[in-house]
Image (cartoon, helix red, strand yellow):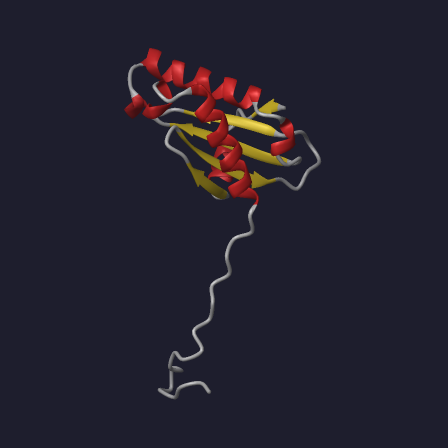
Length: 127
């Protein structure tokens, strides 16, 4: 597993699928190349002082390290956006949250159901 380092990679993942948890937001995106799984971490200044942000980042790295790679898809990039709750949340719960979030990212997006009774632009209704 490699780390994401370039801003362009983080921005590309930000346009992908998302899964929210109390301690972090997980973003994921499939890449077209055949490289390894890559993971990035983001913790903004609104989450606290530098030492608190570093603690959040360390906890997120350890959560990723303890979750089996089986839960992650090959040829994907993931970004964990840390939240302040990551400081106080139980570590075992964070691991379960990550597994759950990874499963939610794998689900196909629901298709928008067409409304057949909606009027056409010319004012006629569909049968």
